[in-house]
Image (cartoon, rainbow, N blue to C red; front, side, top):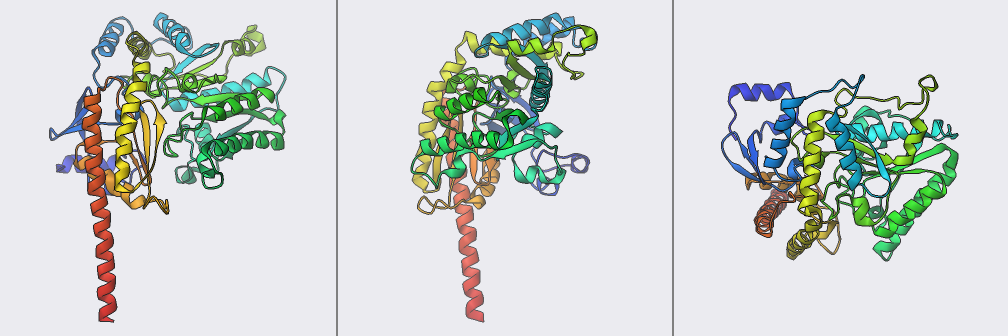
Length: 463
């Protein structure tokens, strides 16, 4: 993409998430519009959106039902004063979101993003224990490779290494355990890895003293670790452990929520109900920023009292419960439930997984993971050594964009999560682009390797 001088200079006045701008300006992507499963850049080039922007566009871009819901609400009210009242449409949203959540998760507070939701959940749990006779419970256990947002508490709970380092020291009271994938080479089966990883959580609780541990927070399917997909037994064990020690189990479903895993929430996919679900992203299909915390209905009792008791949740955000976001969120839920798009994601997911499994013929795919239409592919140098192949992922990021494909590429894995409206034909188109990009990336890195070897040989001969 060729940039005019104005845009080139403007890129030096901002930043793109988690990218070095000196590199980005060499291969810029500036988008102009989006519709359905596609983006178009400022030069009119089309890109297949294989990741819903970034796990956001649940129903694709520009969905007419969502835009109409926003238009109708815009004619009524776009903002309600959060210190004085609440919009009627926001109460409707509370009812709607609670009606599709598992178990007795009916207490809803909405925000403007996933980071706000996870941050609020941890504050909610700490205050809950202070007001229910367990003031010493303040610690949270999370997983290495997990990501829970960019705010201070959410970042402290995250285990993403280099993403955290620039901001250290982080808040105290956050403990980490390893995800099941960390133990793959140490046990004979994936099931054993998961049992050990789950038991490690209880070990930490016991050694920290259960009366100091408030919660366990994790993504049911771990994104930044490479679409880590534990067994249902893993979650059952965590549920039993948390119940046994009066520890709140918090599912960060900012990515997994709203149909991607084959149910409205991954909690339902895995058959385990946490105490709190945090959600965002796909709740508005990218139309307007939104996030939400959904807690057990009975937990709200601890925050209900006389004004002089000061037991209300000591937390708020300007755009929490925004009327526009509430209207769009309800439209998303209605579209998914009325058309059974969450259940449809099961069949589409199996088809997608089979297509991705076909990439194993190139000898660089260790595993295809995920649930529903949320899938990840782990890349290795070869399937004998299983050595990571970061050069391949780095190359594939570039070849994918060159081929008109937007997907989540990490140096050692890539992920897809197409919109729920996708058809098998759409998935065929997407997978063809993925395969083309993978092959070109392989040719590139192997060509560079051969060039390096030839250079070394030439240098040796000259010496």
